[in-house]
Structures are given as C-alpha cells and as structure tokens.
Image (cartoon, rainbow over all chains, first blue to last red; front, top):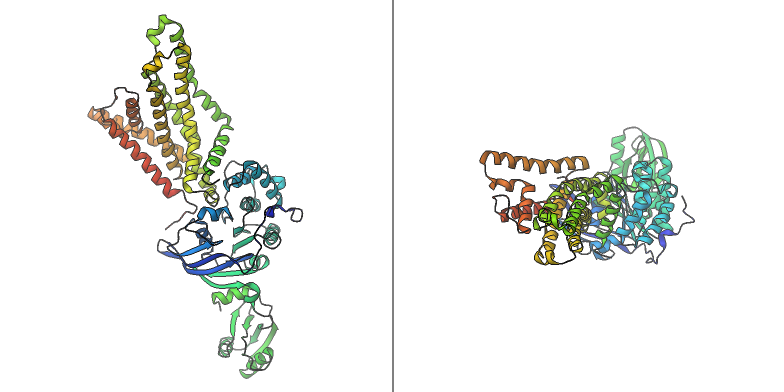
Length: 329
Length: 264
C-alpha cells in the first residue's frame, strides 16, 4: 500500500467536509420486494464524513444503498443525495457516487488497469485521463504490481481492492462501500480498513460503510446509522451514542440471576448479556440516587442476597449501542 | 458527456472481439463471397463475350446478401452470445449501472457491438460490390437503372442486423452461460425452420412460412429488392412477425437488464 505518497483521491477541489451537513436524506422510504417490505418508512440522514450503516444480515442496508443508486424504485418516500432527488436526477447523483458492491463484480476478459480505466470512462472521464487515474488508484489500493493481470485470476482480497479502485477512479464525492471486508483474511481486512479510514479521515471523502461487523464500523466511521428489520433503530455520532464512560458496568453475580435482573430493571437500569456469564448494566442518570453507581449496585445485591463476583466499569462500545438499538437482552 | 457511455461500451466491446484471432479469421472468411462476386463483376465488365451469362442484376445483390446469412448466423453466435450473459456471470451489471449511464445506453452499447460486426459482413461488402460495378464498368448505366439498390442493400442489411442483434441480446440476458445462449439461438433458428418444413410437407403450401424466422426475413428482403416473394405468406405478415420478435426482445431486455436481480 502507498497511503502517504498518494494524493490521488483529491485531485480536484472538494466541498469542505462538514460533519453535520447531510449528504443523504431519507424521508419515509418504503421498498417492497413482492410481499416483503425490505424498508419500512425509513427516515434519516447521513452526514458528511464517514458514516457506518450497521445492522444484522437482512436489515435492509444493501437495499437502502441500491435504492439510493436508483437500482430499486421505492414504493413510497423520497430520497435526496447532495440535495438532488434520487427519482429525478439519478445520473447526476451517480456521477458523484462511487459504489463498491457487496458481491464480486468485474468486466469479463479485462485486466485490472483496463477495467478501472473503462469504469472511469463510463463515469465520464476522457480516455487518457481515465487510464492515468486507473494506474494511480490501483497503486493506492495496493494493486500496482498486479495491474496487468486479468481480474478473473485475482484472489478474493484482490477482488475487493479492485472493486474499491473502480469506485474511486472518477474521484467521487460520496462512496458507498457494501461489506468491503467480506471474505478477506485478517491482514487484508486490516489493510482495507486502513484504506477506508484514510479515505474518510485524510482524503476528505464522504463515505457510507455498510457492514454487519461492529469493529469495522467503529474503526473507520464517526457516525453510525443502525438498521434492523428494515427500519432505522438508532443514528448519530458514535461517541454520542456510546454515552459517557463509567455509566456502564460489567457485572457477574452468584445467586438468582433472573430475579436480580428484574430488580435492576425495576431500579431503572438496563441489562444486556454478553458472550460469557457477564452482563452489561446501563445505569441511567438519577438511578443511583446520590450514591456512586458501584455503591448502589452493591447495595441492591446485598439487599437481595446476591453475591457480586465481578464488577467493573465498562468502556462503552458500539456493540452496546447496537445491542441497545436492537433491544437485545 | 451524458448519453455517450454507449460509445465507450461499443468501442471496448469491438476492440475486445477483434483482439481474438479466430474471430478476425471468421470476419475475413466472411468476405470470401465478396471476392467471388467482385471477380464476377470484373469479368462481366471486361469480357463482353461472357457478359450475358454473368451480368449482374438486382438478384445478384440479393443473392449475395442471402449467401451472407450463414456468416451473419456465425458472427451473431460468436460475438453476441456472451454480450450480456458474461456480464451477468461476472455481476458486471451492478458495476455498469452504478455509473452515470442509463439502461438503454448499456443495451444500445452492447447492441452496437454485434450490429457493427453484422454490417461488416453484409452492408459494407454489399455497397462495395455496387461501387466496384461502377468502377469496373466505367459507367453509371447499371447504377442509374438500378438506383434502388443502394437503399435496398442498406435496408435489408440493417433489417437483418436489427433482428439478429435484438434476438441474440434478449437471449443473452436470460442466462449467465454464453454457451447455453449460443445453443438456444441456434436451436430457435433451426427449430422454427424445421417446423416450417414439416408443415410444408404436410400441407404442401408455403403459407405457413411465417413460422420460420429465416423465411420471414427472406420474404421481406425479397420485397425490398423488388423481387417476387418466394413464399405464399403475405409479406406484411412476415414483417409483422419480425417486428413482433424485435418488440418481444426489447421487452425481455427491459425486464432483465437491471442493477439488481429482484427475486419475489
């Protein structure tokens, strides 16, 4: 990879990134496949910068991206990208968007540099400029040495990179990345995330990263939109959604767990289970009634004859936000 | 430039095909008939004693196009079967349609590739033959007597090209396997012809020629060249069948060429 030496992504003047300026606005968008409502009256906004689109498989993330690209016509609602109505100006919008699809996608019989240059020409670049950009972008994504190889001979990781290259070749204002680390080995995944982070934070590219992998979103994005069952479950800056540190605790007890969880709920707290027998307890404002949160938890445990085996403040993660948004217990 | 993406698609597709030596060889062989006809015209113009035997007429040019049908068929299968099928196999449609181009531009670009190669073995040699006739004869006498040949060759070649191109593109959009598409296309051409011949044997009448794709084209092209149609089917019926096939093909393309495959 050649992140530092490359300035290929910002060869033209880009509007200054304003994190609170919406690049995508959704107003009651409904998408129906046959009898299945893939998106249900989705409203929301994607601000500039790096925004994660998070949700379990089947939440409607890819459907939303495809609707924004104009591949799918919504049954109801309105979508705008850069203040342009998707229904009325699909070509103008697509000229400013780079799309990295979830599934493998290439033009058969072409080598990497021809493929990326061809995509540049399709996006409106003159042939000579497209070829020059193709070389630069392929170096940027780490395929410089393999750029004359037929794309069909590429490994899964290389195919992910070439998809990113074709999305970047025309220097888009907004990138849609659909599960960009799918099928990559740990090293390749790390490099891909580094590229995405570089694009979002150093190259000033607005991007929407659709993923079901919390660490990917947490590492690369500043804002997140959490989707579940075709609806927006939560949205906002990740730091804000995670809340202040110290109000979430990891707790393990010995005793009647179900009834203690009920006690915690009655006291106004929320509990989420984790992989181990440790649960995560969210303590809202005012629940401690003047005491420290820890003291209050110990007091409740003593009161209900439950032994506290483990209690420590938990650093809030996106997983907490995700669990909370999806209402997992 | 908006609306110009089809040129990019067509140019890339044409270059991709002519890089294949086997295909280049096929195109060259497709001009063999042209050479034979050129020699015929040369002999007629320079050796008056054999002129009555080989003198060109409107029928000469019509026969030339008919003989080229074989190459149209081979070129259509070779260059056309994978045009959309290969893109579907490689999930390329989502890449194409995420760029600022319309579905019609994609289809038009793909159609232009096959159409160009078909015209290369029909229209171009056909018009060149007419030109050679003038050059070898050193007079415009034949041409002025048969001025309709210019538009006739052009219309007949374009009609052949449009029918083969849209039929093949529609079939290509139905599958992810170019080989399967090739077999399907050949099957349709031969099967409709076989049914026609079976019906002809049973009824003894050529009124059922509308069943055969090839016979419909033959019928209409005969009329274009001001020749007596060879089948009993009224030529407007043949034309309607051809136009119906093109409309059906466009309808299939409209449904199949999408950025996302929606399974309901």
